[in-house]
Image (cartoon, rainbow, N blue to C red; front, side, top):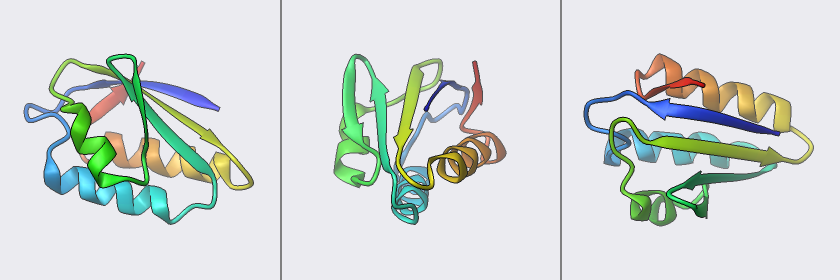
Length: 89
């Protein structure tokens, strides 16, 4: 399952929301990857996520596979939208 997002936050995905996003991803059993700039990282890795340097107006894709993938994708999408980080495209 995949979902694309446009990052709308003025500051992109900076340290504080990145940490919360990783912690949320870690609460699920599914494998969760984030792709930006043709690079894919494990969303359960704060170093991987921060290494991408995602700023405003960037496109990202989250891919989820596993036993709780539906709940994981819904929770991640809700977080990105409710925190004002981005919107679904």
